[in-house]
Length: 227
Image 1 (cartoon, helix red, strand yellow):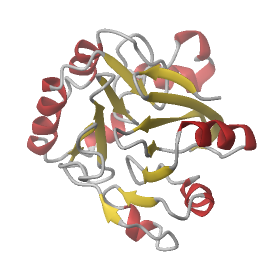
Image 2 (cartoon, rainbow, N blue to C red):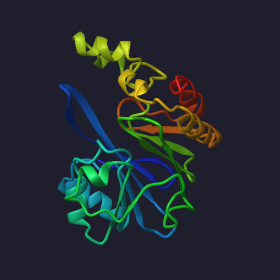
Image 3 (cartoon, rainbow, N blue to C red):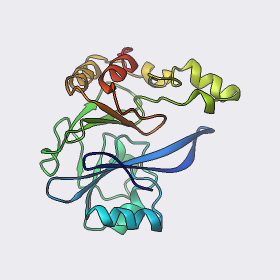
Image 4 (cartoon, rainbow, N blue to C red):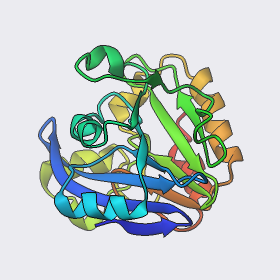
C-alpha cells in the first residue's frame, strides 16, 4: 500500500527478504516530480494493488537503485514500465548485465529530477557504495542501507543480539560494522556526509527500520558519526 510521506512523496513496504540468513523488510519510495512524472527508488515486489496505486500517482519514468544489492525487483518494474529509464548505482551494471541501464548515478542529479531531488554518492568502500537522495518538496533524506534503525521489540535471539552490537537497533541506528570497516578511504564519505547534513532534512526515509518525521538531520549526523 502506498502511503503519503510528505509533499509529493510516497512510501510502500514490501515483503521481507533473506540477507545472509537475516530477515530484512523491504521499502520503496516514489516521488511525483514537478513535471508530473514518477521517480521510483528501490522498488519492492510489484503487486496488482501496488501497480494500481502507482498508476494513480502518475506515469513511471525513472527507476533508481541506491546500491548494488538493491536490485531484486528492478527487472519486473522495468518490464512493466518499458518507457521508464533505469539508473544504476556504482557497481550494479557490471553485476547485473541482464538489466539495461540508461545511466549510472553520480554526485549530481540527472536533469530530469534535479529540480525536485538532490543526491550524493558515498564513495571509498571496497564493498559497497551508496547513493543518498534528498527530496526537496518534503525535505526528506532518503537513505537505503547506510542507516538502519530496527525496532528493539522486533530484535530477538542471537541475530537480534548481533544487530544490537552493530548499532543497528534503536532511535539513531547506524551502518553495519563490516560495511564501516570497508571504507578504507573515508575522505570521500566524509564529504558526502557533510553534503547530506547541509541539506538540513526534516524527515528521514530509510529502507530498513523506523523512518522519522522529525529531527532527521540530527539522526543522520549521529548515525554516521563513525565516518
